[in-house]
Amino acid sequence: MPASSRARTRSALALSGALVGALMLSSCGVIGGDADLQVYSARKYGSEEVFKEFTDETGISVEFIFDENAALLERIKAEGANSPADVYMTVDAGNLWNADQEGVLKPLNSRVLDEAVPEADRAADGTWYGLAKRARTVIYNPDAVDPSEFDAKDTYAGLGDPKWRGRICMRDTSEAYQVSLVASLMDLYGEDRAREIVESWVANDVEIMSNDVLLIEAVDAGTCDVAVVNHYYLARELADRDLNVDLYWASQEGAGTHVNLSGAGVVKTSDNPRQAQRLLEWLATDGQEAMIAGNHEFPVNPEVQPDEEAAQFGDFTEMPINAEAYGSLNSDAADLLTDAGWK
Image 1 (cartoon, rainbow, N blue to C red):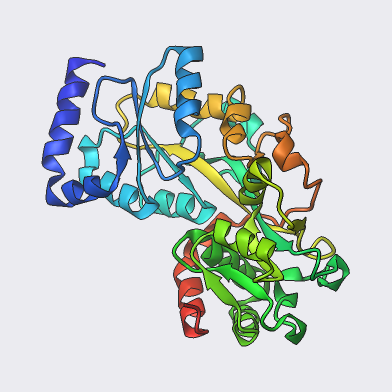
Image 2: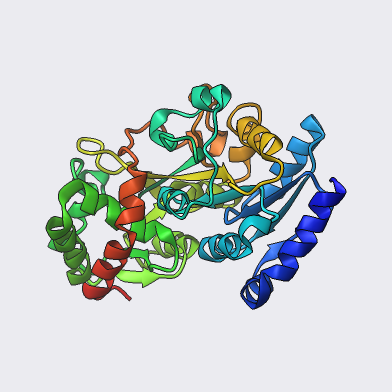
């Protein structure tokens, strides 16, 4: 790392003041040393191994810090032009869109990325690129549910049918997953219909839990007959133990299953943008298998196959991702859930 950059790093950490200091207390990882790249990441699973493989193949060293998305974005903004961050990595397309709107990302001109990442999974102006996908769909206890009971055209809305009363579990709003699912329904049907759907879930006495693993365990135990989870949590659990839980791809005769992204962009103030872009290009090509292997997500690169744990669920039709809708409707979706009585 050039001496000027090291000085810049030290200056950034000093100038960012009390706000950054407070944020650092809640974050973990390594940052501010002598590595070529500094990554601020809200995507936690398996990233250490991915960065190590990138360094082994390219010789470009990486330091990283993990934290919640909002804390990382505020930290980059607070550090301003002196931020040591080169790459911002997060989950949820709405978070990527918001980061672009906040002006912290640099538009890239990369044929490698444009060829590897489909248009639907990246920003039109090149400020961010999806690197892996997660599907949020329905799981069920096969002792209690026949999959023919699901509404194949509109599975999410169908969970508002009174026959599911007292049988459904879903996530709280502490993570973006539930909020983005509702934002996608607002984008698909409009706010009034999305509100009707959420209110029908509440009317069915939906039980709300704080993480997806709890939802899977509840379905396995028969506490819930049905839950809505990200597919990779079930893939991860099934890799470790037998569970009485099956997966159902939602809305395959309609709009498709809700999907979301893990992705990244180069921070506008990066003092090493070429190597930062090289990291994104590697993650979307040679590093795709490493990117998805630790978390059983689906690759965005159509030339790469899902890992065995994700592939076991079979092919499915995706609901198109609308990052602008997920981002711009995030606040309205959160308010809608609160107004409907979501806990």
